[in-house]
Image (tube, rainbow, N blue to C red; front, side, top):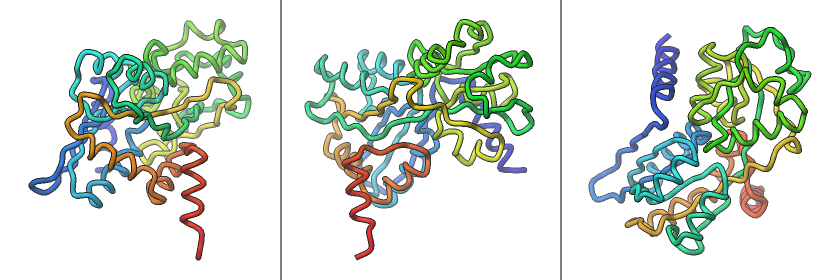
Length: 275
């Protein structure tokens, strides 16, 4: 019962705000790293961050939200050290504008889109996105495509399957993909197009079922990080990026449904192989 109440409180926070911060304390004298992270990393980076703090003794301040909103905030001087975007285009634009540390863009993962419903739903997900045409559906939750890459992917997938115009009046838009998940998990939407990383997270995996949307139905969700030019902790930021490439971290990200770049995955496989 305690865990259910805690989960409800988490989703309430996500509903009322466009981001949530998680603070990992560390010992005196440790470095402090401020990270702006795409909302699909909410649960994965909770574990990744805890491991980094334990291994390095440094402090992390993680703020989650939509990539587009973070992009705008960084352009206006938001004091982050690292930006983890769900769309590589935003770090590239920051780099082109001279707001990123040159040569630090790192493609850390590719995201996957899924269609998710609560366990009590009678919808037949085996029909794929055609399920959204079911007359019993009143509301469909997606992230706002104006600034959330998963929202862009959701619209593209529905257009690909020729159903967007038929269901667009039923769409409810989350400020980011975490808020979108809250809409459907709480019953305020009947079905949601979400990030796989949220669907497999402990907070949701036992509360519903999902089906992956074919990757060919939407543009690749190529996610990338970049160290910001204004960062005062560039060395520590580089340390965190290197930490992401460690075998244990790669395996953790894969458990949350992320596809890891081939070069990192290959190194992970090589290092994990029995000697």
